[in-house]
Length: 183
Image (cartoon, rainbow, N blue to C red; front, top):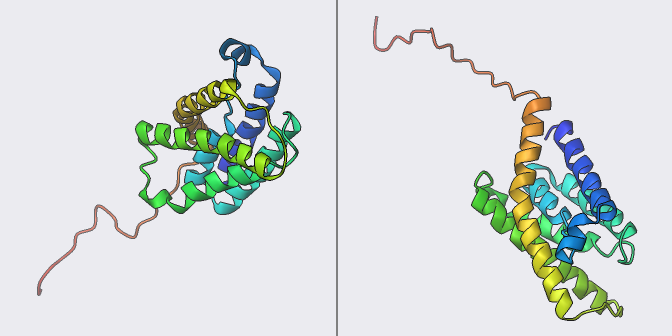
């Protein structure tokens, strides 16, 4: 894991949360806010270490809660659960396929708000729930699903542009002749 990728993940998360809070155009058009943190968590879980996933859950959750009506820190556990769940199964996930990215983005974008509401209800809070909440949940899920491949493409391109390619060293020289048998 290179430091550039970690910095890009955190910068993208910060800009996503800041953009969601300050740019109301999409929220006013759809009647719901699209949350990009679960999509960024999917990318981090598939491309970063457990430490980065945990730090992203804490930092992203606090940034999101500070700029929303959520109690401070309520989003940390849902983000971490999603990130840890994907990270623990990443050997079996075809991360390069757009279809897999959309499916993971759908699951993450549906799970984080659902777990957050569950934590709010468990903690004795009384969130506003109704038929409008279902519309908001569907918009958040669809928006996160569509944003996940875009985030993968954007961050992978930034890594290729600004990072060095891994250097592969081999003791094999292509011009070397291997003699077989007895001389």
